Image 1 (cartoon, protein in one colour):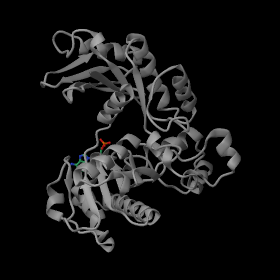
Image 2 (cartoon, protein in one colour):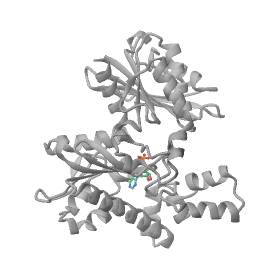
Image 3 (cartoon, helix red, strand yellow):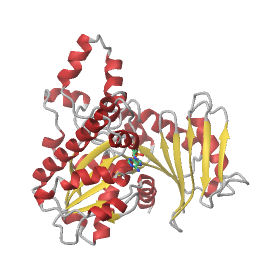
Length: 398
Ligand code: AMP
């Protein structure tokens, strides 16, 4: 069984092609700068063969035609014919309140994803473009949708409600949904398998710290709260997103700086977070480097970042009554020993026994960074959202 996993963004399409029988990634790649000058397809096969193709990739349809073309190409491909693609799994960002889990796509589910576009206008429309194109090119292959929001649909109402008039929740679906669901699910489950404990009996806090960042409380296998909300701008401070912000700051700036709604949106999404405070970069490596060199604003940006993680861990520990496992994932969580150290050292008050030496050595691999007798275990788990999508596709088709 061969499954193609597609993550179709506004100007890029990322893909991975799996042979599920052999548990092997046959090929992966990215179509970049769709609709812009200099669009490219970078394709890597499992044997290391790598090719970069330039071409006029005017839209998602053309991008997918490129992807399918390279998959069957004699020189760089992995299959002889498109009929060898047994199924396509799509990452879909927003499933609103319609989807509690992944689905096999049909007209009804596609029309519901279209309805959710108003909640994620930047994400769902390009996800849908990938779906429409694949349906056209591979009409006989079943297609699935795996939602970033679905894992968080188990949140209780008191966790997802905003304290605004209830009528607005009913009218527009304005509530907290949460994102990165496939990642939070995968890393929490993997952590339990690694430790040999029952997933349905643990209190887990997963910290997905990448360019986008979110933290989730998972009790007995279910997401009960998460830091992102209606949109991915709520919660943790991120590379360029502000995270939690007094709304009064925005109304103040809109008035004082005469900002349009679009500019205010850009301010909190693109010019804030690590970049906004440090003035150096949204990239954690750059900010850490500047901080090590003594840059005060870089130091401050890191302190704010750590402080906010700690506050979320503290509040989610209170919400669950305790915490058995904390997981770090995402580019920062998996690689920044400095971030993990700053957090774990401040959690000694819950009895956590942090192993600094193991932490220092751990980069991008599954590892426990606490002592065996630590009441709360801390794990680094590399996330693999594509694999979850491929596995979910297999589960649905079975
Ligand atoms: P992601 O969005 O999950 O790809 O994560 C991107 C973030 O991970 C960026 O802020 C990177 O700077 C950060 N990152 C990647 N490698 C490292 C590293 N070795 N140390 C610190 N941060 C890293």
